[in-house]
View 1 (cartoon, rainbow, N blue to C red):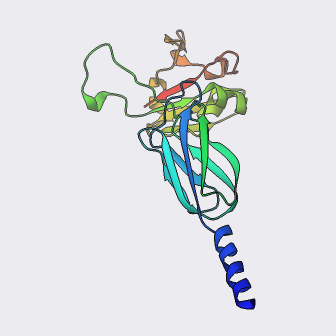
View 2: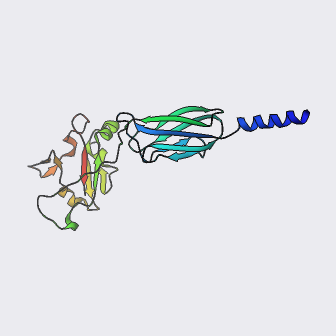
View 3: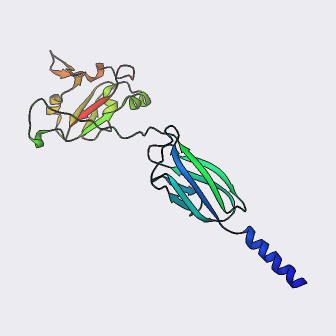
Length: 212
């Protein structure tokens, strides 16, 4: 009699500890279209899968317990959801993802009005965005250009400074072309640019481009 009870208890333990399969689909929340190649995984574990051509996935051999399932796809917000796995053989789940804007680095393409040799074309462009201007809130243009690659900044007074590009000495600094909205920013009578009078607040300037 005792032997039968032991075997019966072992059988119950086996039933309660069997692994479970998680099946489901990952869809676009608006179009309800399948997302192919989305990553689905259980947080903190090695269990995971990628969706097929119909947006379906299968994660097999998962022990019972509480998990957080994570689904991610390029251009969509990452989805997290808590699930509990009990004695059932399989779990069905549908995951809906929302589109998300991706902030990428800014690129500037500049074209000349005439054909030119590639060695004469601009080699590098740095952009100081309106967000950078708002964050730093400097009082003059030179302060924004201090950390720009290829620009040497020398300050000789509170509001007096010189800027040179690509290692040219100060005798060539007047050759730096400065444009404001496409127009020459220099003082005609002096043939130089008064950087200290150019407005640089985020309300007046959208961005600053340095072309070297």
